Structure formats: C-alpha cells, structure tokens
Amino acid sequence: MDFFPRLCIVSAAVVSAWHSQSRVTLPQAEQQLTLLSQTQDTDPRKQKQKEPVRQTDEVDTTQFPITDYSAAGTADLKVRAKREAKGKKYNNRAAPQISESSDGIFTIGDWEVGLPALPVARSSAVIIGDIIDAQAFLSEDGTNIYSEFVVQVQQILKNDSQIPLGNSVAVERSGGRVRLTSGKIVTARTNHQDLPRIGRRYVLFLTHDFSSGVNTESLNILTGYELRENRVFPLDKLGPKHPINSYKGADEASFLNDLAKVLVNP
Image 1 (cartoon, rainbow, N blue to C red):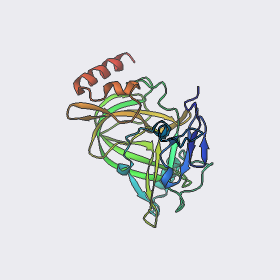
Image 2: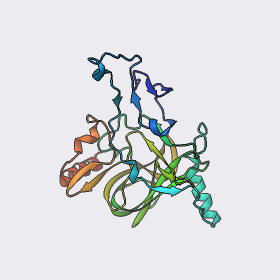
Image 3: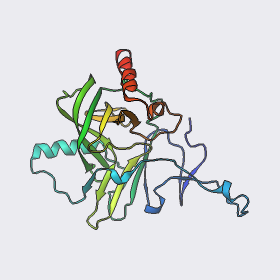
Image 4: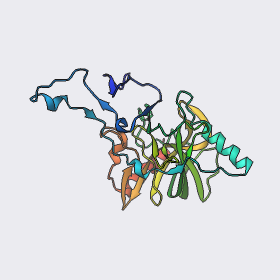
C-alpha cells in the first residue's frame, strides 16, 4: 500500500513512497514536506489549484528538549556505557553526522497505521503521570537526536514491561533539538509525532518495541494523551479520521472509563 501515491518533491530531492521508516535530512527552507504537481501552470485563473498542498501538522518543535552539541558526558564509565547503548539504536548509518551544515532531520514512517485509539494490547505499560524532566541526546554516532523524559508516576494501569515502575520512570522517544557551537539549532522529528512537555500530565502507552520490531530494554512512547482541565488532548498530531482523534477534547472521566474497559478486555 502506497501512502504517497504521487511523488513528493522537496526542492531538488524526490521522495517516493515509504513503507518502513526512512530518514531525510533537509535544508532549513525545505523542512516542511510539500506535495507538488509535476507541471506548473502560469494561468492566474488556475493558480489557486496549483498551489502546493502542505502537510497540516501542529507539532511545535520549539518546545522539544534540547542539548548542546559540546555537552560533556559523564565520567562514570558504567553510566556512559549505558547511555551509549541507548543512543546506538537511534544511529542512522545512511546519514552523515550532525554538523554546521545540518538544518533538520525529518523521519517518515507508517508507525500510526493500524494504531487504535487505546493501544493497550500493543503496550508493555500504560501509566498516568507528570513530566518532571526532559533531556535531548545525540545518538551514539551523532547522526540523530532522541529525547528522554522522567515521568512522576501517579497511576500504573498496566505493567508487563521488563522494568519495575516506581515513583518515577524514564521513557524515550525519537526527536529533539541540538544546539551547535555556533548557536545554530538542529531539530529532529518523526512525522505526526509530538513530544511531551515538562509540567504536563499524560496517559502514556509505552512499549519495548523500537523502530522495525526491534525489542529494547528501554520504554519507548508509542503514543499518549495529555490530561488538561478535565479534557483529553492527543499527544500526536494525526489526521482527523485517525481513531486517536475520536478523543480530542473529550471529557477526562469518560476517556478514563473507556480506557479501564479496554484494560480489562484489550
């Protein structure tokens, strides 16, 4: 099944259909994927229909966690080895290291296809909690960025994970920002995925699965919902017909009641 039936033309780069996760490094002015027709018509009466159809995505990357490119690692060898092991799974051997010539990293995948509104069966753990800390990290080889979030756990709704969940737990997701020595900021993100914000409360669906079915020890965010002012807001910015958006703006109590039912019978 092709998710891009027409060619997606990004300036001089032509991007064809993806079925598995791909990574594209884009110049600053070209970070937003644009769908263009293969011919252009200069007739002003037809100009409106020939305008690019842009990706409607509300992800605010200026709020993504950030790290400094020159940030010194810990002197503790065990902690450093653990961090390198975590970062290694985000490596992209087909991409160059992030440098002053980099501007943005946009990963396209079909992660949301077939994802139900309440993906309990696909989750190793489901928790409710507040984000109390967030930090971006470079991948082990410096080709990508990921973020780690510390969640102050309020409720554990499911835990079949390999990690005991206590008062707090660290979870991960691809994406984040890095500040280069010049002050320039490079942002990495995945299509339709947003990242949690410090100080906000979420229901998080967590998994050990990473990328193309690889199982890891870390807990990765599959998706989630922010709980705010007794309302529910999807973490990820998917199309209006996606099941997750059926709970956009829903009453929190009603949402949690539905979730409780699915937890009993996933």
